[in-house]
Image 1 (spheres, rainbow, N blue to C red):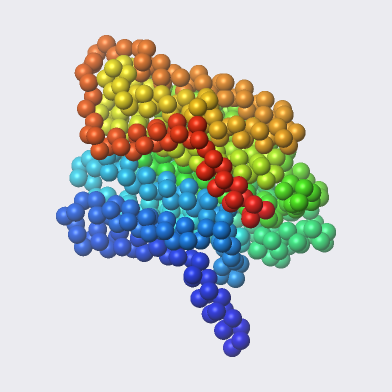
Image 2 (image 1 turned 45 degrees about the vertical axis):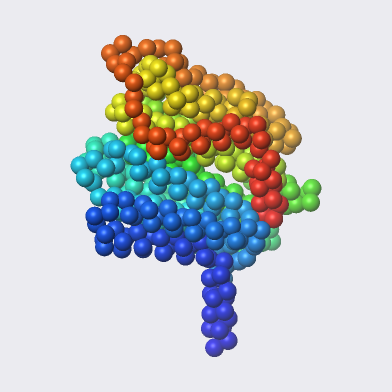
Amino acid sequence: MNNYQVFIDNFVGSLGFFKPEIAIIATFISAILLDLMFKNIKNIAGYVSIVGFIITGVFLAQLSGQSASLFNGLIVVDPFSTFFKFIVLITSLLTVIMSFSYKELYEDNRKVGEYYSIIAGMTFGMFLLCSATNLISIYLAIETMSLSSYVLAGYTKEIKNASEASLKYVIYGAFSSGIMIYGMSILFGATGSMDVNTINKAILSGNVNLIPIIISGLMILVGFGYKISAVPFHYWTPDVYEGSPITITAFLSVASKAAGFAVFIRFFKDAYMYSSIDGGNIWQSLPGFDWKIVVAILSVASMTLGNFVALWQDNIKRMLAYSSIAHAGYLLMGVTVMTNAGIGSVMIYFVMYLIMNLGAFYVAQLIENEIHSDNINDYNGLGSRAPGLSVLMAIFMISLIGIPATAGFIGKLYIFTAVIEAGAIWLAVVGILNSVVSAFFYLKVVRNMFIRENETNKSKLQFHPATQVIAYALGALTIIFGLYFTPVLAWAQNSIQMFF
Protein backbone atom coordinates (compact mmCIF):
# COMPACT_ATOMS: atom_id res chain seq x y z
CA MET A 1 0.00 0.00 0.00
CA ASN A 2 2.89 2.34 0.81
CA ASN A 3 4.47 1.70 -2.57
CA TYR A 4 1.13 2.37 -4.23
CA GLN A 5 0.76 5.65 -2.35
CA VAL A 6 4.32 6.67 -3.27
CA PHE A 7 3.55 5.96 -6.92
CA ILE A 8 0.35 8.03 -6.80
CA ASP A 9 2.10 10.92 -5.03
CA ASN A 10 4.91 10.87 -7.58
CA PHE A 11 2.46 10.76 -10.47
CA VAL A 12 0.35 13.65 -9.16
CA GLY A 13 3.45 15.68 -8.37
CA SER A 14 4.79 15.09 -11.87
CA LEU A 15 1.63 16.40 -13.53
CA GLY A 16 2.38 19.90 -12.31
CA PHE A 17 5.56 19.92 -14.40
CA PHE A 18 3.90 18.13 -17.31
CA LYS A 19 1.46 20.94 -18.18
CA PRO A 20 3.07 21.84 -21.55
CA GLU A 21 2.78 18.25 -22.77
CA ILE A 22 -0.79 17.99 -21.45
CA ALA A 23 -1.64 21.18 -23.34
CA ILE A 24 -0.29 19.68 -26.57
CA ILE A 25 -2.29 16.48 -26.04
CA ALA A 26 -5.40 18.61 -25.50
CA THR A 27 -4.56 20.54 -28.66
CA PHE A 28 -4.21 17.33 -30.64
CA ILE A 29 -7.57 15.96 -29.45
CA SER A 30 -9.38 19.29 -29.78
CA ALA A 31 -8.10 19.81 -33.33
CA ILE A 32 -9.45 16.41 -34.39
CA LEU A 33 -12.83 16.79 -32.69
CA LEU A 34 -13.49 20.36 -33.79
CA ASP A 35 -12.49 19.53 -37.35
CA LEU A 36 -15.12 16.78 -37.34
CA MET A 37 -17.75 18.98 -35.75
CA PHE A 38 -17.20 22.12 -37.89
CA LYS A 39 -16.38 20.79 -41.32
CA ASN A 40 -17.37 24.04 -43.00
CA ILE A 41 -14.52 25.91 -41.31
CA LYS A 42 -11.58 24.82 -43.46
CA ASN A 43 -8.66 25.70 -41.18
CA ILE A 44 -10.27 25.22 -37.78
CA ALA A 45 -7.72 22.55 -36.81
CA GLY A 46 -4.96 24.99 -37.68
CA TYR A 47 -6.52 27.75 -35.58
CA VAL A 48 -6.88 25.35 -32.66
CA SER A 49 -3.24 24.33 -33.06
CA ILE A 50 -2.10 27.95 -32.93
CA VAL A 51 -4.11 28.63 -29.75
CA GLY A 52 -2.88 25.36 -28.23
CA PHE A 53 0.75 26.15 -29.02
CA ILE A 54 0.45 29.60 -27.46
CA ILE A 55 -1.04 28.10 -24.28
CA THR A 56 1.75 25.51 -24.28
CA GLY A 57 4.28 28.32 -24.53
CA VAL A 58 2.79 30.01 -21.47
CA PHE A 59 3.06 26.79 -19.45
CA LEU A 60 6.58 26.24 -20.73
CA ALA A 61 7.64 29.74 -19.72
CA GLN A 62 6.39 29.02 -16.18
CA LEU A 63 8.91 26.18 -15.96
CA SER A 64 11.89 28.38 -16.83
CA GLY A 65 14.73 27.79 -14.39
CA GLN A 66 13.05 24.80 -12.73
CA SER A 67 14.37 21.24 -12.58
CA ALA A 68 12.53 18.05 -11.63
CA SER A 69 12.50 14.33 -12.35
CA LEU A 70 9.07 13.13 -13.46
CA PHE A 71 7.25 9.79 -13.46
CA ASN A 72 9.92 7.89 -11.53
CA GLY A 73 12.77 9.10 -13.69
CA LEU A 74 11.29 8.48 -17.14
CA ILE A 75 11.69 12.13 -18.12
CA VAL A 76 13.11 15.30 -16.59
CA VAL A 77 12.28 18.97 -16.71
CA ASP A 78 15.28 21.28 -16.66
CA PRO A 79 16.42 24.49 -18.40
CA PHE A 80 18.21 22.44 -21.09
CA SER A 81 15.05 20.59 -22.14
CA THR A 82 12.96 23.76 -21.81
CA PHE A 83 15.29 25.57 -24.22
CA PHE A 84 14.94 22.91 -26.92
CA LYS A 85 11.19 22.64 -26.33
CA PHE A 86 10.88 26.33 -27.11
CA ILE A 87 12.81 25.76 -30.36
CA VAL A 88 10.42 22.94 -31.26
CA LEU A 89 7.32 24.90 -30.23
CA ILE A 90 8.22 28.05 -32.15
CA THR A 91 8.98 25.96 -35.24
CA SER A 92 5.64 24.13 -34.91
CA LEU A 93 3.75 27.41 -34.57
CA LEU A 94 5.46 28.96 -37.58
CA THR A 95 4.91 25.79 -39.62
CA VAL A 96 1.17 25.96 -38.99
CA ILE A 97 1.06 29.64 -39.97
CA MET A 98 3.16 28.97 -43.08
CA SER A 99 0.82 26.15 -44.08
CA PHE A 100 -2.19 28.48 -44.36
CA SER A 101 -0.65 30.06 -47.46
CA TYR A 102 0.74 26.89 -49.07
CA LYS A 103 -1.35 26.34 -52.20
CA GLU A 104 -0.23 22.76 -52.88
CA LEU A 105 -1.62 21.67 -49.52
CA TYR A 106 -5.13 22.83 -50.47
CA GLU A 107 -5.28 21.50 -54.02
CA ASP A 108 -8.32 19.41 -55.01
CA ASN A 109 -10.14 20.54 -51.83
CA ARG A 110 -7.89 18.32 -49.76
CA LYS A 111 -8.93 17.90 -46.11
CA VAL A 112 -6.28 19.44 -43.89
CA GLY A 113 -7.70 18.82 -40.41
CA GLU A 114 -5.57 15.72 -39.87
CA TYR A 115 -2.52 17.60 -41.16
CA TYR A 116 -2.63 20.20 -38.40
CA SER A 117 -3.54 17.58 -35.78
CA ILE A 118 -0.56 15.43 -36.69
CA ILE A 119 1.77 18.43 -36.39
CA ALA A 120 0.57 18.73 -32.79
CA GLY A 121 1.10 14.99 -32.27
CA MET A 122 4.62 15.19 -33.64
CA THR A 123 5.34 18.18 -31.40
CA PHE A 124 4.30 16.11 -28.39
CA GLY A 125 6.76 13.37 -29.39
CA MET A 126 9.57 15.91 -29.75
CA PHE A 127 8.77 17.42 -26.34
CA LEU A 128 9.10 13.98 -24.76
CA LEU A 129 12.35 13.36 -26.61
CA CYS A 130 13.89 16.58 -25.28
CA SER A 131 13.22 15.37 -21.70
CA ALA A 132 13.72 11.60 -21.97
CA THR A 133 16.25 10.05 -19.57
CA ASN A 134 15.26 6.40 -19.80
CA LEU A 135 15.87 3.99 -22.67
CA ILE A 136 12.17 3.16 -22.90
CA SER A 137 11.03 6.80 -22.86
CA ILE A 138 13.68 7.70 -25.46
CA TYR A 139 12.51 4.97 -27.81
CA LEU A 140 8.80 5.70 -27.35
CA ALA A 141 9.39 9.41 -27.90
CA ILE A 142 11.34 8.77 -31.09
CA GLU A 143 8.62 6.45 -32.41
CA THR A 144 5.86 8.94 -31.53
CA MET A 145 7.71 11.63 -33.41
CA SER A 146 8.66 9.36 -36.32
CA LEU A 147 5.21 7.89 -36.98
CA SER A 148 3.76 11.39 -37.23
CA SER A 149 6.53 12.57 -39.53
CA TYR A 150 6.03 9.60 -41.89
CA VAL A 151 2.41 10.62 -42.42
CA LEU A 152 3.22 14.30 -42.82
CA ALA A 153 5.97 13.59 -45.36
CA GLY A 154 3.46 11.86 -47.63
CA TYR A 155 0.41 13.97 -46.82
CA THR A 156 0.01 15.16 -50.41
CA LYS A 157 -0.12 11.51 -51.42
CA GLU A 158 -1.58 12.22 -54.87
CA ILE A 159 1.83 13.60 -55.83
CA LYS A 160 4.20 10.79 -56.77
CA ASN A 161 7.26 12.32 -55.10
CA ALA A 162 5.37 12.68 -51.81
CA SER A 163 4.38 9.01 -51.69
CA GLU A 164 7.92 8.00 -52.59
CA ALA A 165 9.34 10.29 -49.91
CA SER A 166 7.05 8.86 -47.25
CA LEU A 167 7.89 5.27 -48.18
CA LYS A 168 11.63 5.90 -48.12
CA TYR A 169 11.27 7.70 -44.84
CA VAL A 170 9.44 4.73 -43.31
CA ILE A 171 12.00 2.22 -44.58
CA TYR A 172 15.03 4.15 -43.37
CA GLY A 173 13.26 5.00 -40.10
CA ALA A 174 12.36 1.38 -39.39
CA PHE A 175 15.91 0.27 -40.15
CA SER A 176 17.54 2.86 -37.87
CA SER A 177 14.99 2.29 -35.09
CA GLY A 178 15.59 -1.46 -35.23
CA ILE A 179 19.33 -1.00 -34.84
CA MET A 180 18.83 1.50 -32.03
CA ILE A 181 16.43 -0.66 -30.00
CA TYR A 182 18.78 -3.63 -30.38
CA GLY A 183 21.61 -1.47 -29.06
CA MET A 184 19.42 -0.43 -26.13
CA SER A 185 18.68 -4.07 -25.32
CA ILE A 186 22.42 -4.82 -25.25
CA LEU A 187 23.04 -1.83 -22.99
CA PHE A 188 20.27 -2.94 -20.63
CA GLY A 189 21.64 -6.47 -20.56
CA ALA A 190 25.16 -5.24 -19.77
CA THR A 191 24.22 -2.76 -17.04
CA GLY A 192 20.89 -4.05 -15.73
CA SER A 193 19.24 -0.64 -15.97
CA MET A 194 17.34 1.55 -18.43
CA ASP A 195 17.98 4.81 -16.59
CA VAL A 196 20.87 6.68 -18.24
CA ASN A 197 22.34 7.94 -14.96
CA THR A 198 22.27 4.45 -13.44
CA ILE A 199 23.90 3.11 -16.60
CA ASN A 200 26.67 5.69 -16.16
CA LYS A 201 27.28 4.55 -12.57
CA ALA A 202 27.37 0.91 -13.66
CA ILE A 203 30.00 1.66 -16.30
CA LEU A 204 32.08 3.76 -13.89
CA SER A 205 32.05 0.92 -11.35
CA GLY A 206 34.26 -1.12 -13.66
CA ASN A 207 32.17 -4.25 -13.15
CA VAL A 208 30.80 -4.41 -16.71
CA ASN A 209 32.36 -5.58 -19.95
CA LEU A 210 33.19 -2.51 -22.06
CA ILE A 211 32.86 -4.26 -25.43
CA PRO A 212 29.03 -4.57 -25.37
CA ILE A 213 28.85 -1.07 -23.88
CA ILE A 214 30.77 0.37 -26.86
CA ILE A 215 28.84 -1.70 -29.41
CA SER A 216 25.50 -0.67 -27.93
CA GLY A 217 26.56 2.99 -27.92
CA LEU A 218 27.44 2.84 -31.61
CA MET A 219 24.12 1.17 -32.43
CA ILE A 220 22.17 3.78 -30.48
CA LEU A 221 24.18 6.44 -32.29
CA VAL A 222 22.68 5.15 -35.54
CA GLY A 223 19.19 6.08 -34.33
CA PHE A 224 20.27 9.53 -33.18
CA GLY A 225 22.35 10.12 -36.32
CA TYR A 226 19.30 9.33 -38.44
CA LYS A 227 17.23 11.94 -36.60
CA ILE A 228 19.81 14.72 -37.01
CA SER A 229 20.64 13.79 -40.64
CA ALA A 230 24.30 13.14 -39.92
CA VAL A 231 26.46 11.29 -42.45
CA PRO A 232 26.34 8.31 -43.05
CA PHE A 233 22.75 8.14 -41.75
CA HIS A 234 21.54 10.90 -44.07
CA TYR A 235 20.36 8.95 -47.12
CA TRP A 236 16.68 9.63 -46.48
CA THR A 237 17.10 13.41 -46.18
CA PRO A 238 17.34 14.70 -49.79
CA ASP A 239 14.54 12.51 -51.16
CA VAL A 240 12.21 13.17 -48.22
CA TYR A 241 12.90 16.91 -48.23
CA GLU A 242 12.27 17.12 -51.98
CA GLY A 243 9.09 15.03 -51.99
CA SER A 244 7.44 16.32 -48.82
CA PRO A 245 5.27 19.45 -48.69
CA ILE A 246 7.71 22.33 -48.30
CA THR A 247 6.18 23.27 -44.95
CA ILE A 248 6.97 19.81 -43.58
CA THR A 249 10.44 19.95 -45.08
CA ALA A 250 11.04 23.15 -43.10
CA PHE A 251 9.52 21.56 -39.99
CA LEU A 252 11.76 18.49 -40.20
CA SER A 253 14.88 20.55 -40.90
CA VAL A 254 14.58 22.50 -37.63
CA ALA A 255 12.25 20.90 -35.07
CA SER A 256 13.16 17.26 -35.67
CA LYS A 257 16.84 18.14 -35.73
CA ALA A 258 16.55 20.12 -32.48
CA ALA A 259 14.85 17.24 -30.65
CA GLY A 260 17.43 14.83 -32.06
CA PHE A 261 20.33 16.93 -30.82
CA ALA A 262 18.71 17.36 -27.41
CA VAL A 263 18.47 13.61 -26.81
CA PHE A 264 21.87 13.00 -28.45
CA ILE A 265 23.61 15.42 -26.08
CA ARG A 266 21.73 14.31 -22.98
CA PHE A 267 22.17 10.58 -23.59
CA PHE A 268 25.90 10.62 -24.23
CA LYS A 269 26.58 13.15 -21.47
CA ASP A 270 24.61 11.26 -18.85
CA ALA A 271 25.41 7.68 -19.91
CA TYR A 272 28.86 7.68 -21.51
CA MET A 273 30.65 10.70 -20.02
CA TYR A 274 31.71 12.01 -16.67
CA SER A 275 32.70 15.49 -15.48
CA SER A 276 36.26 15.57 -14.25
CA ILE A 277 37.84 19.02 -14.45
CA ASP A 278 37.08 22.74 -14.65
CA GLY A 279 34.24 22.54 -12.19
CA GLY A 280 32.43 19.90 -14.20
CA ASN A 281 32.32 22.03 -17.35
CA ILE A 282 34.46 19.61 -19.36
CA TRP A 283 33.37 16.03 -19.97
CA GLN A 284 35.65 13.05 -20.21
CA SER A 285 34.81 9.86 -22.07
CA LEU A 286 34.44 6.80 -19.89
CA PRO A 287 37.53 4.57 -19.89
CA GLY A 288 38.00 2.33 -22.89
CA PHE A 289 36.64 4.43 -25.76
CA ASP A 290 36.93 8.07 -26.87
CA TRP A 291 33.53 9.20 -28.12
CA LYS A 292 34.95 12.57 -29.11
CA ILE A 293 36.71 10.95 -32.06
CA VAL A 294 33.49 9.34 -33.27
CA VAL A 295 31.52 12.60 -33.06
CA ALA A 296 34.36 14.50 -34.76
CA ILE A 297 34.30 12.03 -37.67
CA LEU A 298 30.52 12.43 -38.01
CA SER A 299 30.92 16.22 -37.93
CA VAL A 300 33.58 16.38 -40.64
CA ALA A 301 31.78 13.84 -42.85
CA SER A 302 28.45 15.68 -42.53
CA MET A 303 29.90 19.10 -43.27
CA THR A 304 31.97 17.96 -46.21
CA LEU A 305 29.47 15.69 -47.94
CA GLY A 306 26.55 18.05 -47.33
CA ASN A 307 28.31 21.09 -48.78
CA PHE A 308 29.99 19.41 -51.74
CA VAL A 309 26.89 17.50 -52.91
CA ALA A 310 24.78 20.65 -52.50
CA LEU A 311 26.96 22.29 -55.17
CA TRP A 312 25.32 20.16 -57.85
CA GLN A 313 21.69 20.57 -56.84
CA ASP A 314 19.20 22.44 -59.03
CA ASN A 315 16.16 21.89 -56.79
CA ILE A 316 15.89 24.44 -53.95
CA LYS A 317 14.44 21.90 -51.49
CA ARG A 318 17.09 19.32 -52.33
CA MET A 319 19.81 21.93 -52.03
CA LEU A 320 18.51 22.99 -48.62
CA ALA A 321 18.37 19.30 -47.65
CA TYR A 322 22.10 18.89 -48.22
CA SER A 323 22.57 22.25 -46.54
CA SER A 324 20.73 20.81 -43.53
CA ILE A 325 23.15 17.88 -43.48
CA ALA A 326 26.07 20.31 -43.53
CA HIS A 327 24.59 22.35 -40.69
CA ALA A 328 24.24 19.15 -38.67
CA GLY A 329 28.00 18.87 -39.12
CA TYR A 330 28.57 22.39 -37.80
CA LEU A 331 26.35 21.64 -34.81
CA LEU A 332 28.25 18.42 -34.13
CA MET A 333 31.44 20.49 -33.87
CA GLY A 334 30.04 22.00 -30.68
CA VAL A 335 29.17 18.55 -29.35
CA THR A 336 32.61 17.17 -30.24
CA VAL A 337 34.50 19.38 -27.78
CA MET A 338 32.11 18.34 -24.98
CA THR A 339 32.42 21.50 -22.93
CA ASN A 340 30.04 24.00 -21.41
CA ALA A 341 30.94 26.50 -24.14
CA GLY A 342 30.52 23.87 -26.86
CA ILE A 343 26.98 22.88 -25.92
CA GLY A 344 26.07 26.53 -25.30
CA SER A 345 27.23 27.34 -28.83
CA VAL A 346 25.01 24.56 -30.21
CA MET A 347 22.02 26.13 -28.46
CA ILE A 348 22.84 29.59 -29.80
CA TYR A 349 23.26 28.14 -33.28
CA PHE A 350 19.83 26.53 -33.14
CA VAL A 351 18.09 29.85 -32.48
CA MET A 352 19.86 31.42 -35.45
CA TYR A 353 19.28 28.35 -37.61
CA LEU A 354 15.56 28.38 -36.83
CA ILE A 355 15.22 31.95 -38.05
CA MET A 356 17.27 31.80 -41.23
CA ASN A 357 16.34 28.29 -42.34
CA LEU A 358 12.59 28.68 -41.82
CA GLY A 359 12.85 32.04 -43.56
CA ALA A 360 14.54 30.50 -46.60
CA PHE A 361 11.96 27.72 -46.83
CA TYR A 362 9.05 30.14 -46.45
CA VAL A 363 10.28 32.42 -49.22
CA ALA A 364 10.80 29.32 -51.41
CA GLN A 365 7.20 28.32 -50.60
CA LEU A 366 5.77 31.70 -51.58
CA ILE A 367 7.73 31.67 -54.83
CA GLU A 368 6.67 28.09 -55.58
CA ASN A 369 3.03 29.14 -55.11
CA GLU A 370 3.40 31.58 -58.01
CA ILE A 371 5.87 30.00 -60.45
CA HIS A 372 4.85 26.38 -59.70
CA SER A 373 8.45 25.26 -59.57
CA ASP A 374 11.17 24.71 -57.01
CA ASN A 375 13.96 24.55 -59.60
CA ILE A 376 16.70 27.09 -58.89
CA ASN A 377 17.04 27.86 -62.62
CA ASP A 378 13.45 29.11 -62.59
CA TYR A 379 14.52 31.76 -60.06
CA ASN A 380 16.14 33.66 -62.92
CA GLY A 381 15.03 37.28 -62.92
CA LEU A 382 13.08 37.10 -59.66
CA GLY A 383 14.96 40.17 -58.48
CA SER A 384 12.81 42.29 -60.78
CA ARG A 385 9.65 40.16 -60.64
CA ALA A 386 9.53 39.86 -56.82
CA PRO A 387 12.10 42.33 -55.45
CA GLY A 388 11.04 42.20 -51.79
CA LEU A 389 11.09 38.43 -51.44
CA SER A 390 14.27 38.21 -53.51
CA VAL A 391 16.08 40.53 -51.09
CA LEU A 392 14.80 38.44 -48.18
CA MET A 393 16.01 35.23 -49.81
CA ALA A 394 19.41 36.85 -50.37
CA ILE A 395 19.57 37.76 -46.67
CA PHE A 396 18.74 34.18 -45.65
CA MET A 397 21.28 32.72 -48.08
CA ILE A 398 24.00 35.08 -46.83
CA SER A 399 23.12 34.22 -43.24
CA LEU A 400 23.31 30.47 -43.96
CA ILE A 401 26.84 31.05 -45.27
CA GLY A 402 27.74 32.83 -42.04
CA ILE A 403 28.62 36.29 -43.34
CA PRO A 404 28.97 39.03 -40.66
CA ALA A 405 25.98 41.18 -39.61
CA THR A 406 23.65 38.18 -39.91
CA ALA A 407 22.38 35.65 -37.38
CA GLY A 408 24.24 32.83 -39.11
CA PHE A 409 27.58 34.56 -38.48
CA ILE A 410 26.91 34.72 -34.73
CA GLY A 411 25.97 31.04 -34.65
CA LYS A 412 29.14 29.96 -36.42
CA LEU A 413 31.27 32.42 -34.47
CA TYR A 414 30.37 30.79 -31.16
CA ILE A 415 30.73 27.28 -32.58
CA PHE A 416 34.21 27.98 -33.96
CA THR A 417 35.24 29.86 -30.81
CA ALA A 418 34.25 26.94 -28.58
CA VAL A 419 36.15 24.50 -30.80
CA ILE A 420 39.30 26.66 -30.85
CA GLU A 421 39.18 27.19 -27.06
CA ALA A 422 39.03 23.40 -26.65
CA GLY A 423 42.22 23.06 -28.72
CA ALA A 424 40.60 21.41 -31.76
CA ILE A 425 41.94 24.00 -34.20
CA TRP A 426 41.99 21.51 -37.06
CA LEU A 427 38.24 21.00 -36.70
CA ALA A 428 37.62 24.76 -36.79
CA VAL A 429 39.72 25.00 -39.98
CA VAL A 430 37.62 22.25 -41.59
CA GLY A 431 34.46 24.10 -40.59
CA ILE A 432 35.70 27.41 -42.03
CA LEU A 433 36.74 25.77 -45.31
CA ASN A 434 33.33 24.13 -45.56
CA SER A 435 31.66 27.50 -45.01
CA VAL A 436 33.64 28.84 -47.97
CA VAL A 437 32.42 25.94 -50.11
CA SER A 438 28.82 26.58 -49.06
CA ALA A 439 29.04 30.14 -50.41
CA PHE A 440 29.07 28.78 -53.96
CA PHE A 441 25.65 27.11 -53.85
CA TYR A 442 23.96 29.67 -51.61
CA LEU A 443 25.12 32.54 -53.80
CA LYS A 444 24.00 30.65 -56.89
CA VAL A 445 20.43 31.34 -55.79
CA VAL A 446 21.22 35.04 -55.33
CA ARG A 447 22.97 35.15 -58.72
CA ASN A 448 19.98 33.66 -60.50
CA MET A 449 17.58 36.10 -58.89
CA PHE A 450 19.53 39.31 -59.48
CA ILE A 451 21.97 38.73 -62.33
CA ARG A 452 20.34 36.26 -64.70
CA GLU A 453 17.18 37.29 -66.50
CA ASN A 454 14.14 35.18 -67.33
CA GLU A 455 13.62 35.63 -71.07
CA THR A 456 10.22 33.90 -71.26
CA ASN A 457 8.29 35.56 -68.46
CA LYS A 458 9.08 38.97 -67.01
CA SER A 459 5.71 39.76 -65.46
CA LYS A 460 5.62 40.87 -61.85
CA LEU A 461 4.63 38.29 -59.27
CA GLN A 462 1.75 39.22 -56.97
CA PHE A 463 1.73 38.16 -53.30
CA HIS A 464 -0.92 38.82 -50.71
CA PRO A 465 0.58 41.20 -48.11
CA ALA A 466 -0.56 39.00 -45.19
CA THR A 467 1.42 36.03 -46.50
CA GLN A 468 4.65 38.04 -46.46
CA VAL A 469 4.52 39.20 -42.85
CA ILE A 470 6.28 36.13 -41.44
CA ALA A 471 8.95 36.28 -44.14
CA TYR A 472 9.75 39.92 -43.39
CA ALA A 473 9.70 39.26 -39.63
CA LEU A 474 12.21 36.41 -39.99
CA GLY A 475 14.34 38.55 -42.30
CA ALA A 476 14.38 41.36 -39.77
CA LEU A 477 15.33 38.97 -36.95
CA THR A 478 18.14 37.58 -39.10
CA ILE A 479 19.69 41.05 -39.23
CA ILE A 480 18.79 42.06 -35.66
CA PHE A 481 20.33 38.94 -34.10
CA GLY A 482 23.36 39.43 -36.30
CA LEU A 483 23.94 42.80 -34.62
CA TYR A 484 22.38 42.37 -31.16
CA PHE A 485 22.40 38.82 -29.86
CA THR A 486 22.85 39.34 -26.11
CA PRO A 487 19.39 37.95 -25.17
CA VAL A 488 20.02 34.73 -27.10
CA LEU A 489 23.47 34.38 -25.53
CA ALA A 490 22.11 34.94 -22.02
CA TRP A 491 19.27 32.46 -22.58
CA ALA A 492 21.63 29.75 -23.79
CA GLN A 493 24.14 30.32 -20.98
CA ASN A 494 21.47 30.25 -18.28
CA SER A 495 20.03 27.05 -19.73
CA ILE A 496 23.34 25.24 -19.98
CA GLN A 497 24.62 26.12 -16.50
CA MET A 498 21.97 24.08 -14.70
CA PHE A 499 22.34 21.22 -17.18
CA PHE A 500 25.97 20.76 -16.28
